[in-house]
Amino acid sequence: MKKITRFMALVGLMLCLPLVSLKAQNLQVLYDTGREQVTTTLEMFRPDAFGSTFYFVDMDYSPKAIGAYTEIARELCFWQDTDWNWLSVHIEFNGGLSTGLSFNNSWLAGLTYSGHSADFSKTWSVSAMYKAIPGTIGLKGGKQPHNFQITGVWGINFLNGWCSFSGFADFWREARMWQGTEFIFLAEPQLWVNLNKIPGWNNIPLSVGGEVELSSNFVEKGFRVMPALGAKWTF
Image (cartoon, rainbow, N blue to C red):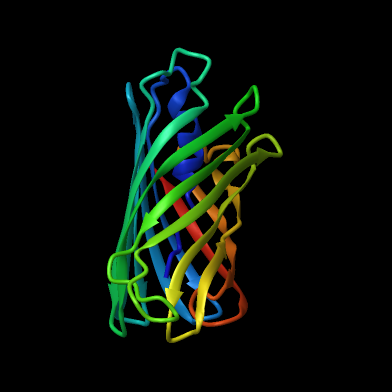
């Protein structure tokens, strides 16, 4: 379970650029056609003079709550007024649980490269991180807490703001003895139609659309494609 879209992280690509007055939150409700369950995601992004903070909380329902997962990340950039403002230090925590299992807590630290188009209609970032997963047992036995993760995030607004294409891709190492695997890939591209572009709806920050989860060795061994449909309210 990791339904993060990282829309707020896309906005956060400006974290090491000259600080602007920008903060955002959104609430998403998605129906996962593959798992036949509903997921709600609450995301928050807030920049400050030293970088930005981002977190999200997922809740899965089928129909009762069956799982929760959270990530909280801090980007540090004390050099926003220099030529190195495209680089930041990334610190992150991941963890969660469900009715069937609990997720190992993960601690990540690394560097983030970010960029954007002149009008900020296109944003992107790449993070390379050390990932500590305490208690992980390697496929050959013995502890294997030291791992890595590479994350790419993008966002594109087009058709004069009517549509948004955003998402992320993660590739990381995590030994899973029950699957016989230790490398995991997960991507969730999203496409939204922003209804506040409808004349007279400018004060209704509602978007409709969905995402496609592309994963390898994530929920189970092998490659899976799972579409989801839903709505997003930005506030």
